Length: 460
Figure (cartoon, one colour):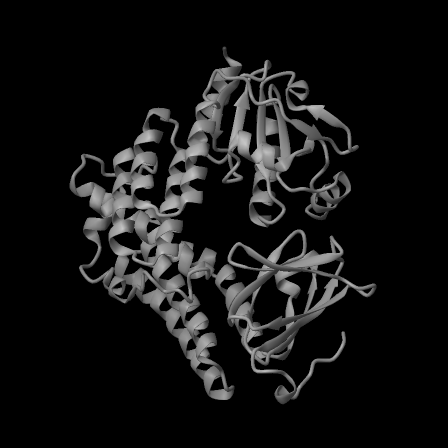
């Protein structure tokens, strides 16, 4: 590691330094980005180190991507931050040093702590509302007290506190919104009706138009779940439904309407509208409903690029209906040999996809595939990466996660494949027959109904 400048006076007011070392790098560069905009590509030197200077920049959360995984960091004027990370245990090994280290290490620890508490919160979500609230509030209060002590000990900035408090509060809000969906004691409507009258009082504290937090994961995740929830409550008022059905056209129309009513920030509103439009298209098997929701989306969104993409996706899905032959794309096997996708399908086949940036899905999808293969040997199961990787790079990722390379492929042309197969989100699964004819373009590996469908195909 090379040293950081400790004298802030040596750094200009609108300048900051970011550098570090990548242990076991997968590429010879890192990409620095903010939101979805790439700021720069920075190459590693012979010691796998890099350095970058921010000039005349807007302080806030940026991210760096090493070719396989990404993580965010807070950068402010006069900061001089060094990061050290081992890609084998990316998040767990990441450490910051230098001017700005304390704030970044705190935010990183908060991120890891929240991840570790997921199972605990899932468990307490099975409790009665009052007991759930009490235990959840204790978790939040402990984090707020810890933050208060940190602020008293260190001279922290207003921007840091904005992110730290948002992480604590919006994860707390998220857990409360998720409660009716996680508690399986009754249907969602019955659970809503049994909640204490003040259960959702926190909603009065929601800022739907927080530009500082617009890209912050806890805030974005909360808003998505929040609109799921309030749209469902609205839907129950004028429908006969009493359970959550994300494929209901009326429910999704309610959601788009509520987003338009409550969010005025153009960026946040358009992104929420687009996310929910795409989510519906990816989930619903009723092709006839696509145009109705698309019309509502186009009337509310002001983002022409997103409207174009949504229209293109709807037209693409119309070509992926059951009975159509799967698009004839080229895939690359573990030996770097190119093959037609149709040519590697010789019997009923399950095709699933994975993204190296989504470690959780990578692991659970491969484990599920292994389980399905044992139970249904009548099917082939094919895994295809949606990353622009070489076969060697793909093999390294799989071997690092203890998965073999059998029936593993990646696309010759990733962008074309994502477009033709509408591979957003990546958890989509195709079921095709021995002639590569689509049986189901939207199967779910983790849905018990999928196994029913597989048995039906076996018995045909």
